[in-house]
Every structure is written in structure tokens, then in C-alpha cells.
Image 1 (tube, rainbow, N blue to C red):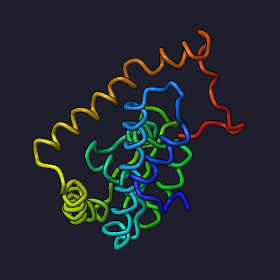
Image 2: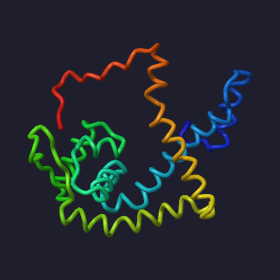
Image 3: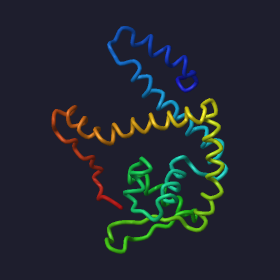
Image 4: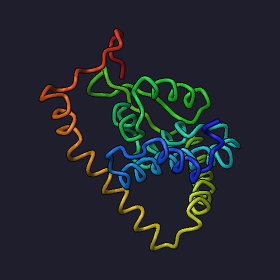
Length: 190
């Protein structure tokens, strides 16, 4: 099964499969390892820290965003969490039912919904984040502080490249046409 192969084996298999295909191998390895690292970290943290609080990675990230940014519109929370508004709706309902998150209408625009932490949600994050951070330290345990800073700076450059030039690149790849908006057939929700 693919999930049971080591990173070394996966790299060997990809290299054998691609053979003489003219590709940018270093860039392929960088992006593949971003994905592998993110998946490994997510799975580890869900199984070590978040499981005890009955949270998924996505639920934790939503709580984190609202904890750090304070009361926020759902569209901003979804964007910061890297999830769709539809996914956020389900996660927010679950967190609200557990008494961790509060949803309220926007005072100036009734179409918008604001999210904020409850006292219980605030208490959870104050207790849980130090445990989460201990696992951040664990998963980066083979790196020095300087290497962690270099890695963070390098990944920041990847994010900035996509943020600053991604839309232009997508338009170019689509032949100058703007990407068509995704339609679900349902009325947009806040």
C-alpha cells in the first residue's frame, strides 16, 4: 500500500517511473516533500494531541484562526484555515454544538456570519496550544533552531510565490481566460 512506503522508497519509485522524462526533479522533490511533511505532521498531531480533545486538524485550525484573529467573518476564517466555506459551515456547527464557538449575524450586513470563541473555547485553546506546540517541537526535533527558521523562511517564499503570482499563472495556463467560478447549484451561504 502506498501509505506504508517510506519516504526513501517513494522517492526511489518516482525516480524509476519517470526515468528520462525531462522534468525539474529538485522542484518536484520539494513540493512532494511539502505534501508528505504536512500529511505526516497532521496525522501525528491528530493522533497525539488533538484526539484527547476530540478535535480534527481542521477543527483545531478553525479554533486557532478565531483565537488569534478574534471575532471574524466566516469567509475570512475559511480563507485563513485553507478550507471551503461549506467545510467551515459543518466544522463551525460542530464546534458550536460543543460550546466552543459562537456564530452571530454581522451587525451591518445580515448576510454575513461572525465567528468567535466562547469562554469554553478560549479555555481549551489556552490549555491545548502548549501541548500542540510541544508536538511542533517534536516533529522538528531533527532540525536546529536555525534550520527551523530557514525552513520557515523557505516555505514562506513558496506561499508568497503562489499568493503574488498564482492567479496570473493560472490565467496564463488557461489561455488568458479567467478561471470559471465553481458553482454548487446552491445559494451562497455565509
